[in-house]
Image (cartoon, rainbow, N blue to C red):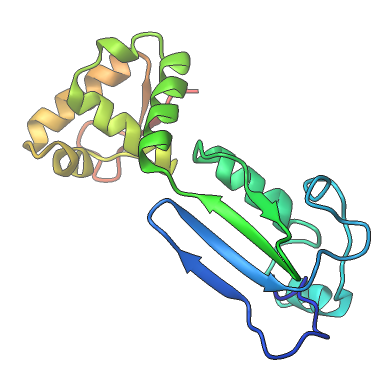
Length: 186
C-alpha cells in the first residue's frame, strides 16, 4: 500500500482494521490514473515508481506489479472470496474476508473433489489432511500424534493407511529414518 499511496495527501495514515470476519486496509486518495475497482485485477500502474523499484531492489517485494495478483492468488489458495476494493469518499478500502466456517466448508468441498474417498475417512485422517491441505507442509509421525492426541504408533498406522489409499506419499530412506515425512500425493 505504501507504493500506491497518494503522497500529496497529508495528515492521514494507512489504517489496517481487523475484525472477526475480515481485514480492512484504508488508504487515503483515489486509485491512480487508469486503475478502477473493476479493472484492478488486470490493470497495472505505479503511482510511485521509484518507491516500487526501491522495494524490489531491497528484496521486500518479489517483483514489480505482483501485489494485487498475489493478493488474489493467496485468497484463492485459502478458499476465501476474492478481495473487495471500494472507493468510499477520498480513499481506497481493501477488504479481505476471513470466514473460518466458510473456508472450512470450501476446503471440505475441494478435498471431496480431489479425494473420492474423503467421506469414508475417519475424523483423525480428515484432521491430518485438513492441516496438510491448508498449510502445504509435510507431515511427520510426531505432528500427526499431536494433531490426533494419540500415540506415535497410532499416528504411524494412520499415516500408512493414508499412503495405502494413495492420498499421501511417504518420503524416507528406511522405516527407522529420523527425517521421514509424508506429503499429499499428486
